[in-house]
Length: 250
Image 1 (cartoon, helix red, strand yellow):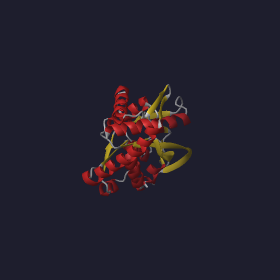
Image 2 (cartoon, rainbow, N blue to C red):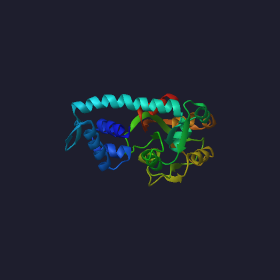
Image 3 (spheres, rainbow, N blue to C red):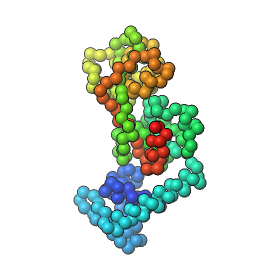
Image 4 (cartoon, rainbow, N blue to C red):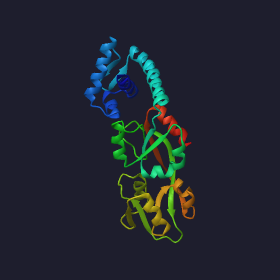
């Protein structure tokens, strides 16, 4: 099963090295597994080139078999094991898009793991996560889950202070710094979105945040000014799990 999964990944991305990065293996391991698979089936599956690999006719046929087999294996695991779908996401995404009550009651069961994008990517590579959702591009295969609207969140009469995430890779921080003059504006770094919103409510400053934060009932007394930019939210995971996550969020 694992060799078929490796083969399917190589066939999809057209590169041994890319497949190795996505699956968290050494490239030599992926190359060897493909070699052994070809040896066992007594056929050549790929044509090797300087730019990657190209599926040969027997490889294209195996893609059809592998897709069916791996999909059925996923369905078997889902039916009999009834394991929770382990979703890794950042604090902002968890608070903005995952209703706790809905998560608890959802079937199949969902388990949220919240951490930094860097740690979550490492967990995904070590198979501790089934799905990774982040607002940052990773070295994994990234599909855009959706594009979120963002804008300035503030309170009436708030101070001319800009509250930004301490995480230098935060997309809201990067976009905010591109819209203001960091040399003349007063900037305060904040560790968490919860602290940031609390400071905004107290009139201590303003911040650039997703519109869904403003739409939360406890924040609707604040002021929100949407801007003409969006932040992409990325998802990584196998087709079955990502389909279930998309369905849940919709």
